[in-house]
Length: 87
Image 1 (cartoon, rainbow, N blue to C red):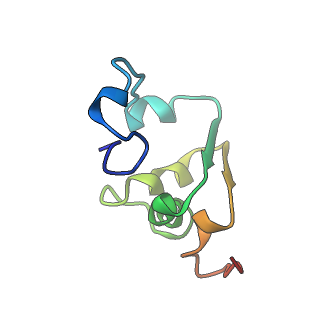
Image 2 (spheres, rainbow, N blue to C red):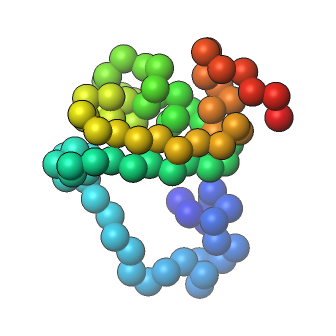
């Protein structure tokens, strides 16, 4: 997956260990701070902000958390209905 997204050039460049968390575990946090640069996550950002909460749109669940912060660049929110950034 990370190779397909362009984060790593080859399988040998992928770290041997990583931290992964379930949505359930993330929602237990006091605060969620989410930094989302780049266009490849624009649909997930749109789901987090504009979609109804649904198991089909994983990022939408962040709307249910009482203290969620999204830090976006212009290109990551290019699909928003409410914002049309000039890029």
